[in-house]
Image 1 (cartoon, rainbow, N blue to C red):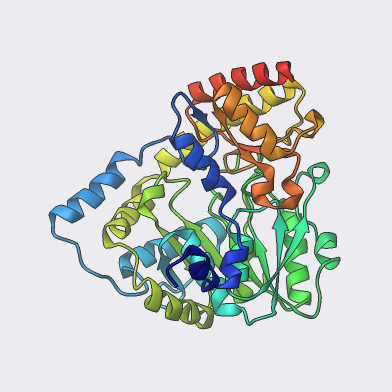
Image 2: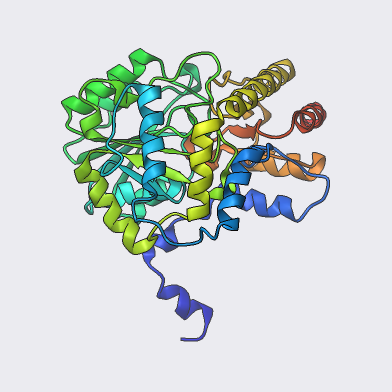
Length: 391
């Protein structure tokens, strides 16, 4: 029982079969090196705005260190409901339709577990964020990955969905603006997907954490489509647009029956989100519009630069409409995405993430985050150009 082989045999087969995150594997490599420019992690280089940090600090000074309601502070839930109503026109009752979670990651986890029975199929699009497939499998669901293509701007279409739906399909998971491709959907795209979900009686999970970060079009949420509020769990959080990654703050909005189901899991596994982070989030919702606008303008400048740089190098890259990632096509160089990323790191000290971290159809691509500092992005592009010249 004491040897490693015996211990491994006791671990759940589901857990054994799921690989480590491809993003975190590269993060560990980068953390052990010097002079590395990292375009790997999707974390804003901006420090959380001072007045948001001050709200947490003042709460701590006042001795605000207790548990909160499982659902979260009511004052925060009211702020969230007002924020969503202003953005989408959709109203949620803060008492029983808004749940504060420890990041969007927890929100997604409890949403999937609240809905899935063993064998239920979850439709989702790839390339996708690294946690989607594992979370479905942890719940003993069946992940059904739908490939999106560069030629279509990595958009999910109704035709794609119709080709993959079966009688076992129960949930549709969406993420637009998208990590890792930066793709965004038009209003018509969203309306077509909504019609599909209604026709096939699917519950929709929509991860819209990047909805503030769209550059060439206004974001349109699927909950704004008539008939979708009643069958959708809306997921959002403060990490990206508010530069609050370490606060680990997310939230869900859904009908009372779905919120109650998620809350049951939340109260037994997490209890509540940290109260200091909740206090900071109240301030973020009230007074951070100017901060978001400033950071968004900076991301757009970086987006334009990194996209133009790849195109000048002859590396095709779909222009990202949202989030802060460029998904560059390196298939012409005759090596796998992982080989390309490792060589770029070894030879030029630039870290990016292999496209295969986001699903098999990510082969031939690398993801570069332009949430890094502008000067770092410029130097990274010089090094990438030097690397491909040698190739």
